[in-house]
Length: 586
DNA sequence: ACAAGGACTTAGTATTCTGTTT
DNA sequence: AAACAGAATACTAAGTCCTTGT
Image 1: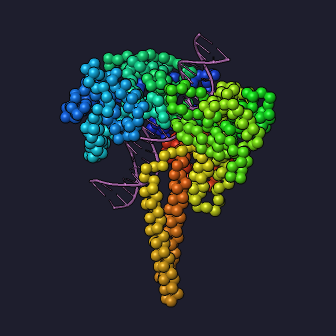
Image 2: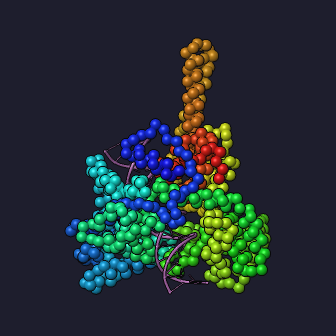
Image 3: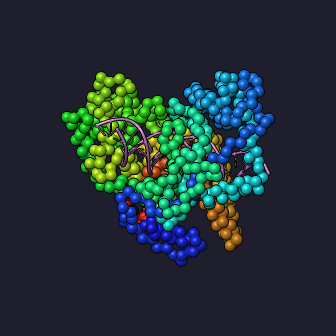
């Protein structure tokens, strides 16, 4: 499939146009021997962050009330802080401590001996300068803005694409992350640390031997050039906060990402075939003599039922304290033999990925409840709930149950199956298109809730809700007016009985209908938005829902695909849009 | 068997773009 | 033309899971 697609695309890029392209889905993804990701790879290397531009002389930094001229290096780091001055981060103790420590490392020995207390540093002038700058940027003339746009386009054209196996592919992140202050999420012990500037000497280039190897910037050298076709990345470097590796990789629309995505959903569909067996198995295991097996079975039950993440162990003090299923601690759950008329309720309260809170009260089966009581016996709140279990034990077990099965497949499977089933349940054939789309969004929302995909309510939420409401009110009045007009036109027509007044009645009728439709659309919009206040639909749409389900649904109900997927999403899911027919079953 | 390293997916937020209203 | 709102995109952190080395 991807072979066909890419061939037709690349020919079109050369300026040709087919009369029509028939695409035949192939069953197998990979044309390569095990582990080989490509045969040819050529690219231009990364784009580096622009060099630091020192502040103009009139922008001052004050220490202890006195003007102080900073060395270039110290000044650069100071500007990072100044740019964040309005942010809550800069009031947090850990942030300030980490920042100050790293800032001092960049100072001259003179500066170091003078600047000993962050509270005595006054960045406000610098901050004002940056605010003025960004204001000025907004006020730029059309021509100036166009110039910047053109330059960005040139950069994208030159560095934003690579050639992988005869096909020109878009690169996802060809720009190297600029230096700045690290902003972790949640209560991160490293917040405020200096993210250092990445130089060509830090960069490993990956490309094929027979390609044109990208040239480092003048006067610089790459750290290494390698030719590893068992990986998909083009560029990598080691970041200084966690010491982890960062990569430049291809866009989701690329063959290599698309195939992988497809494969992911095929694995989840294989799970569909054996999930009943697996569920029976873990139910049996709740009774096992071995504690390890019981813990594994209860954890798997949570992963399946609640779509929890696996929960790898994390190094203490290196990251925010967050957990997943296997790393749950005793303090994260409460057992209620009875709660609000329900039996055996488990109350979950913990911080998951990105420090997003997971809070849920779930009635569970009696056996699970009894097991949990057992696991919690004689333990402190900070002890592991599943002390005989970790993700590698769990995944090894899953591998035995089904080839390619890991904990995260359950999330994909449950998300996709929920969407499919919710769509079946919620779609009303008699609804018009906006109402059907509302149903789609509700199905999507059910998944987002299952996966606990949250967002901060937009700052302007209340206001925009009020705006919408006043629009609705106005529309209602308009409708009342139109109805009145229709009524009088009807009465008029009854008296006069001529063609002209009949026509007037018809047109008034149409107007009423039109306004009714508009009103309904607005009301649907309001409901949708209200229900979506704290829920993020994007993540599940992009990562968990088999796109073929959505495509099939659109085809079945005659919904234009553009109503469900925007341009980027259509590019990512091109394979599914072409492949799925209206009878597709996940 | 276990820890560290490596590669890749998933995640929420910040910024920019675009179209509309004032 | 400015202001605004919502959508789209950019950004990069934070997970999962596999591989490698001891």
